[in-house]
Structures are given as C-alpha cells and as structure tokens.
Image (cartoon, rainbow, N blue to C red; front, side, top):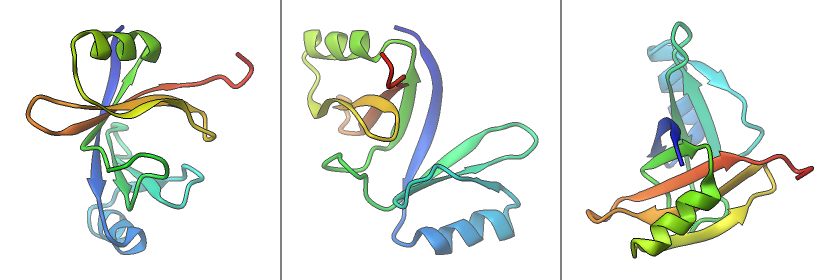
Length: 120
C-alpha cells in the first residue's frame, strides 16, 4: 500500500459560513464534490486543499485527516493485523470511495480511502 495524498478534514458547524471565509477572505476556490455534508476548498495555484465537513454521512465520527491510498483493502488488512481500532468498517460508499476509519494510537481518527470504480 502506498499513500497518494493526505487531506486535512476540518469539522465545521455551518458549511456556507465557512465557505465564505475560505473563498472571500483567503481567496481559495470551491471544488464541488456533489455532497451536502462536505466541500473542498483549493489553493488555485498549487491544488493544495482542505475539506470542510459538517457530519460524515456514514461514519460515526468525523476524521481529522483523509489519507488516499492506492490499495485500501491492503491498508485495511494491515490495520487489522496490527491491532488498530477500526472506527468505521471497510465500505464502498455510494459517492465512489472505498474507505474505512482507523484510530491512531494518540486517538485521532483517519479516513483511509481509495477511489472506487463501480464497474469493478
């Protein structure tokens, strides 16, 4: 398994209010994800981004980070083998992500994810 990208996930109470802050004040661009509970704001020149989320649609708690990997099944098997707490089971979500949540030894929750091709 190889990590492809790490994204900060910020829990917010009002997505519209936060969107205005990040876009109007900081000059970031909104990236439509087609979901009403999460949005991404992007640095136009570099593509760096932050995800803002109100409440995860299926997870029991919001993650601190989303870690995109090239083999989420392998990551899940490794987390289980190493005895880490699985907070949200390995799931193929309707919005095209296969993911699970794992708790770090320090207590943070990470969303370990891979884009999923629904034809597979």
